[in-house]
Image 1 (cartoon, helix red, strand yellow):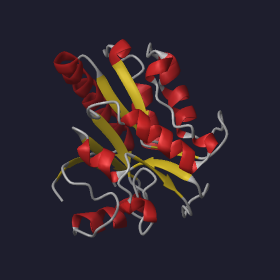
Image 2: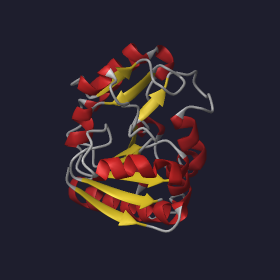
Image 3: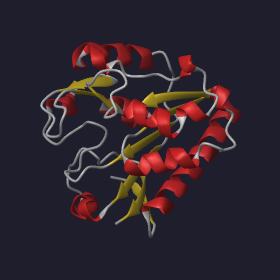
Length: 217
């Protein structure tokens, strides 16, 4: 695995560093291609990052937002990643609603994954994917030893998640690996062991080549 690791003292410093990467990536993508395709992660550290971006100098009208994963819960459920993103960022900036590409996870994992894969197939490439890491080394909703890891679709149905809810939708490895840039955020002492295992080369789901890591452990 090829990776660049930046260490920070606090989760807030991680959030600020990643916010700076988002601003820079958006500026570059919009200047070069006229659009910025950005994948959001769930979790506490990404939420802090999104809050920092509310007043960022980004041409939001040229931003398309995608989601790395979603839980199969009703629309508006506060355990959904899109609800967190709405509250932390999306309702505060001028992204057109049709450029916020939500995962229709309320339809069930299989149907929602197929619809999301179809939507993703119409864009050339994702510009920036933000990812977190769980204590077991999972990322998005790609868990160790789960059959979804071997699927080749751009978005995959995930069943029997070790964390509730058991049914989810996740970007597949094909989408993650083809993105122009991947940034993985890791904070919290509980994730130290998994991070050390990653650094030792263990084959965990979060081990995606050519990723940038922003770490506070």
